[in-house]
Image (tube, rainbow, N blue to C red; front, side, top):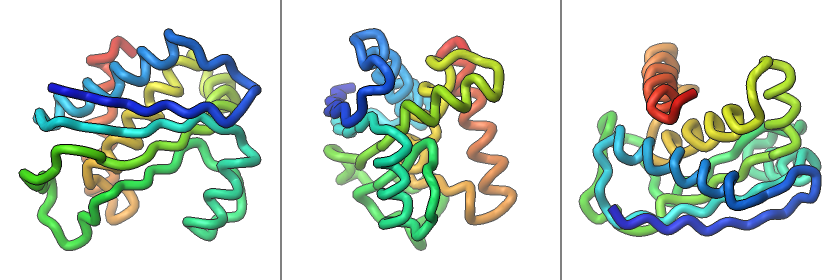
Length: 157
């Protein structure tokens, strides 16, 4: 599988190093492999802080607070059958925006590593880019949780 990830760092609270980028690459790859996606794929991952993700959350979701991750898929899966993967999908899936500040807070709150939290947020967002939406129903939420758990296990978390 050919994968291109475009990274952008818009924050200064957490160190964005090679290891973090490799972890994101593994999270993206495991998600794509689990979903049977073998097309040429491009994804952008932006690291930000609570202030910037708060502004994006308010602008795009009308939610006036910071969040941990936002997903901006380039395809509209509305009305498509579950698991639909168009054959034309061979380029950009979309954008992932992760607040590393919020990820640090949550890792401490949940009692696990920062790396585990960031990997989880990436997997969660990748599933959104692939058309899954846990907010549609309880069944969709459970389906997405199962997928996340399996992929995180494959990543060693």
